Length: 268
Image (tube, rainbow, N blue to C red; front, side, top):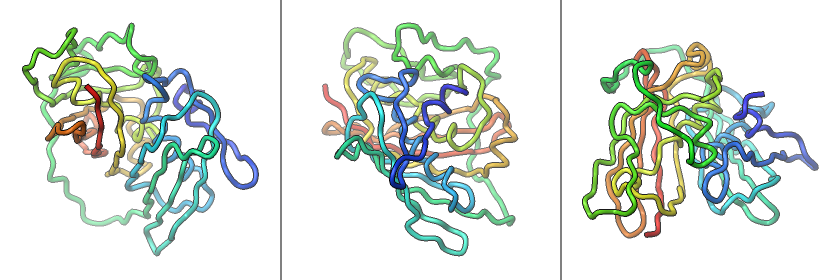
């Protein structure tokens, strides 16, 4: 089993919920990497027998730290229409709701299609040396980061000169894995906090909420195989301990697969 599938694995528990367990392979500073938590909630819908269509969007709110160990996931369909289905899922440890999600699935129609967005220019990933992951948080070692621009270059302390928040890079799993929505959801949160690039120092940050929009169906994802994805991330405002973050994920042939936004808090 791929480490990501093991980390997001859910089994039935009594009376009608699901049970999972955190994975040390995707550990961050004080808990699981948020992308895996989000992917776990999405998987609870993907594996549900009443799901109709593919996921189109997922909004995940991180309400408390997830402690190492087991957790429960409750999932239910809120409403099923003719083509769109709304879901709610929450991850609990004891009496604490650590994360919750609203997820929309839909049966996609075969109709007119147009992509106004254009991918950024980027060289072939094979000619770019991956970022060294030794000495970084455990979850970082599960992935490959090949920066085209805006690499994570850290220094002992902030020198008072803000740098660009924008990064462009090729992303992939360190252990090859075929693309699906669990993987795409995980990668929507794989961009380092933009404030790290701006201040070039590490300090506590936490994603409060993130929304991912999927612009591809399951068949289109599966056709990608295990190829790397091209990602672009940026931010608009850092103010009063909160900043925004947005990103895009592109296929190598220039198809926009997902867009995502986040709200992140930080402490100096």
